[in-house]
Every structure is written in structure tokens, then in C-alpha cells.
Image (cartoon, rainbow, N blue to C red; front, top):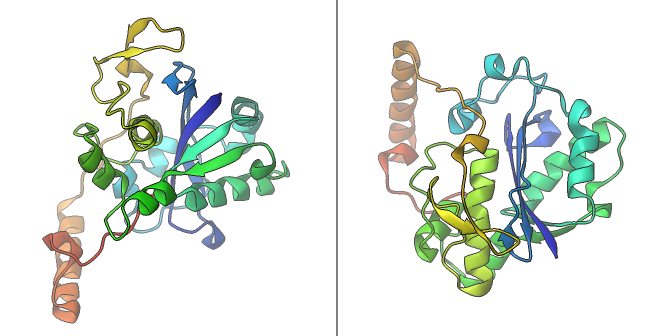
Length: 241
């Protein structure tokens, strides 16, 4: 049984508005164990980020300027996922973006090549009425995500692999929690997870003027709605991709 835990990062929330994929991260599971055969690519989007999207991912157009476009890695990506079961949190989001990318380069539909399991739908069925974001599930299931400071394709796929195993078997962890954790490989031997497989990510720091504009916007939100999300308390949490 070949499963691929997949996550994407994008320039915004809707592909219909012209947003594009900027990162794809995949973790391969063979018989529910990590094989080490992962797939990770940053992509040049040829469009700008929506407001706030760059801060969520820590990516920038400058960092992505020398990265390949999707059309340059599409054959490699399709060969990697072909015939697999994709495990995705909020699958409609990632699949929508990937189907759009494939349509733009004339490569047919991804759904015809793979099957898809949505861990968000699984979590909502098991924990109705509760928050089921990836972070919330990590806390509920005991999966260590302390090193998740930003959204990242491969990092989130590794965390989701732990979450998926816990959701489907009750097993707490398969070894992606800490960079030096020993994990069982597909062959049954024990190996250490190598943090070097994570490609370097840029650090985005807000300037003084950007921070001032941010605070001014929050103040307007407080006056209009009575509070701002960043102040902490909120009625409901949107599900991230």
C-alpha cells in the first residue's frame, strides 16, 4: 500500500483568483511507515502574494525568483504520485490548486491518477463540533509540532503523517516530531530522521512601517468588530490548508 501525505503552500486562498502553488511537500508511506522517499519543491509563481500569505509561509518572491515553474517539475511530480493514495488535510484546497496547475499546462486531471483521503473530513467525523485544524489535532493526539513556526509544505506533510497514523490506528507518533527522533523504516530497521532534507526557508521580518500599518489595521478592526483575531480569543478557527 503506497500512500503519499501531501501539503501545498500558495500565494493566496483561491486559485480562481489567479493564485498559484509556491511549494509542494510530500512524504511517502509504505505499509504506513515513512520510506524516506519524499518530494519537496519550491516553485516560482509568476504572480504576487495576497496580503498576509507571504507572512504565513515565510516565503517571498525574491526567494522564489530562481526556483522552477510548475511546468518544469510537472512530469517528475506526476510520476511520483501516480497510482498512490494522497493523504491531505482539507483536500479540496490542495486538490483545487493542483488541478488548476495541471490544467494550465495541459496535463489532465490529478484525480484520475490518484485516490484522495481527507484527514479534515476524518477528524470532523471523529470530533464533531471541535476545532480540527492541524495544530488542534496535534494537541489532541499528542503529536509534537513545537517546531512548526511557519506553514511549510514538507514540514506540514511530516506532521500530518503523524496525525494520520494517530487518527487511523491510535498510534501516537511515527517519528516526524523531532529532527533527531529514530523512526521505523519501511524495511523495519531503525533510522534517524535527517533534518537536512528540509530545504532552507527565508526569514521574513516586518519593517517598522509595516508593523505600524499592521497595528493601525488591527485598531480599525477592534473599533468595527469589538476585537481582532490577533488579540487571542475568537469564536471559531478557520481550517488551514
